[in-house]
Image (cartoon, rainbow, N blue to C red):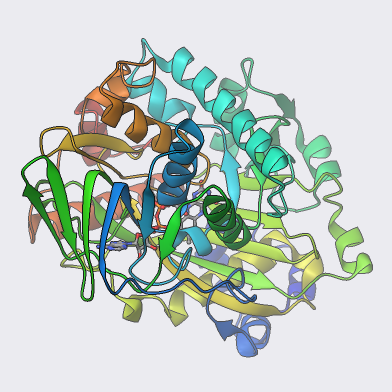
Length: 490
Ligand SMILES: Cc1cc2nc3c(=O)[nH]c(=O)nc-3n(C[C@H](O)[C@H](O)[C@H](O)COP(=O)(O)OP(=O)(O)OC[C@H]3O[C@@H](n4cnc5c(N)ncnc54)[C@H](O)[C@@H]3O)c2cc1C
């Protein structure tokens, strides 16, 4: 376990101080004071900072409801589906049901990076769909621009900022990776240039892509999409958990505790939660991701590290950190630990994981030792719907009347909008450029049942960590997974 054991000020002076977050285990053994981390976390409250704002209420469904399209799930995928369905056909009777509250799950807890990639990064897409990657990249860019256009034309107040993305190398071998990735992909920055952008002693080089990423307030995006849905005529119900899906002649019947929905078509946008379709149960696993948010930085604190362009930032390790500024200058800092629990369960008991928050905080102060007086106000976690290809997959069921999407893994904020259009295209049964994609037509291999899933995932995680600690060298397990097209390469 990584415990920060010296004050950050000591670290700046200490010649043995780690120059990268992955150095930390060896170097910090020499120190004994855990004070900085403990103090910084002491007043943090548990729960998503994004959801710590007033939000609208929607009623529970308590009757029999007939509609043309029923959307199950009130996260981004469901909301974009309902909104775009209403825009395509304003006469359609559309109902969206949400088991809990709109945007309470991944859509209200994420980092708010709106990345154009539909494939969880270029490398992952290139490896899996080499012949269509250019199309996928172009469609991803078009989707990001379309999202911006939707947000502007609908007047959604989601704190959208097209800041671009800065990838940073914090280990010598990553400098080569970034240089290789740079071809046509943004501006490569040397050590001095990257630290001129954002001052961290851990940065060795950077790759700045000004146009491929925006940042957003995740929960506001969900709430504002719900408002736009309602204004477009969609009926929204919260606290309405779809428990069973039956075919009833040409109609579908979906049952919740207190209501029955009869509809012609349905879209299942239930992400990491148990699917209403048995066939989907082994296709994804929940992997927990953890996040911290600081108090708003003062002007002086921010001046110590620069960050004037406010880019989203990520390092390029297998176990990576992602971080960004909010409009009120907090730093949202997440990633690194990605935890799978035996049994595939989504369970809020997995979320408050003290060791992980301490590790994340320690990494924060190593990255920004100049911010040793900053405190964290929030800590939270969410389950990520992970499949074996690390990006969304789709399908049709019940004679083509039910479309579903799952498996966004860690990059669903932008791709959920694309996914919604794919679901609507699939239900229309008219081939489109989207539905013709191999990525859309093919589904990933399922994960094996337990205990094999757990053994395999833990072994892969251990191997990725070893690769990060040994100049990126992938062991036999990772190389085998790569060869089988199951490797994580983003
Ligand atoms: C901590 C964290 C950080 C992340 N950071 C990023 C990031 O920076 N950028 C990025 O692109 N992606 C990120 N992601 C991933 C991204 O948040 C998700 O891919 C995206 O929000 C998925 O949207 P969704 O609508 O599919 O799922 P969700 O937001 O999970 O919504 C699914 C909804 O369906 C409802 N539901 C499920 N079953 C039923 C049922 N039977 N009946 C009724 N309702 C049901 C659930 O209650 C839930 O509200 C992150 C995820 C996490 C957890």
